[in-house]
View 1 (cartoon, rainbow, N blue to C red):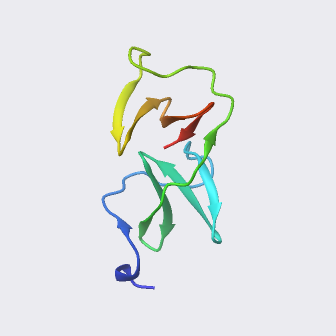
View 2 (spheres, rainbow, N blue to C red; view 1 turned 120 degrees about the horizontal axis):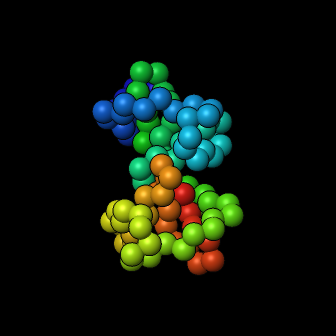
Length: 98
């Protein structure tokens, strides 16, 4: 596969892998790491950009919203909250990893 066959995420300064601190999900024979509103997977000397999976953040004890103390990040049609190195987005009765 050449880089023209897939979307490459440019300028990535963080190495993803087990224990890197980001949420991860298995997909189509590889691991995607959810990071700054994107899903990345290592590929040769770069990271491929993949669609963001639906990945619920387990046992979230804090309610996000205006004035909650976390930075807000516009993300498409909603707001993510930057929380402990993750971005969380409200989804019904839980928060998703973004």
